Length: 349
Image (cartoon, rainbow, N blue to C red; front, side):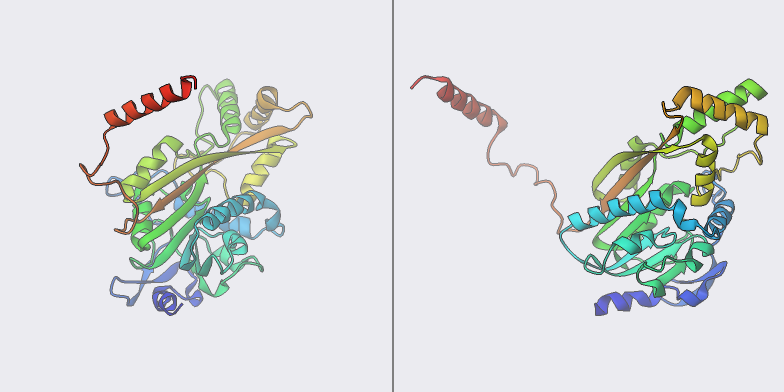
């Protein structure tokens, strides 16, 4: 417990919520640095998402009077992450929730699993309208996932709930997460996968091709599950686990789906997004959506593919492969033994 609080000295206090968060240098001293709307175009990193637009979208979503009505999906995924933490039969002293929103994981992860939970969020709005049932509200930090203001070897566990799919430099972000973990620390995260909202994407593309002779991206690109393991390995994680889940939500019409995405702060934030969508094109897309994917009861399904990531920071104490040449039996001898055992079973007494 004392060790966890010593490590918390480098966490920016809640009083520093602004467009500039106070962050620490490697030596532990504080310095004012800007973390909002980081431009990630340099150094060979593709500038795919507009981080400033995403921050504003999340701020607007948090200001809705009925914001809790749009959080069912995040709450469900938070429970799934909590189950994965419980599967690890050991407590964690200090944890980080990266992209915490209004404290979805903080509501379901108790102090028996994680003693102290630091909760970091890109936008200020969700932090100001934090869930009353969320824990450790004194340790809320506004910071960008692309430029994490935490020291190396600080956290025993880092979790992230549906936030990393908006990061431009995902390999760099995963490397930062690994660096903030103590040796044998664990990262558990979730993000939207490539098949998310494929119904909406196809309907908008077909409608725009019909009306305009071409189409623009209206649904942001998502990571492919086949690449996630390689990304974790490239970041330096070991003992990797990547699995997927699909959640299908039925809406009365595509318009309710679009409203739900805005309420979640999950509308399009790609750099090359179009500023508006013609009403005629939107009506055509709604008709295509119902014709191609509509249910018998008149509703329309929306698929959310959730990718769950788990990786450990390397440590000599972890289980690894045996040294080359340390085997005591050869596979050839094992084959002979198995054949002899099979013959003895099949032979009559």
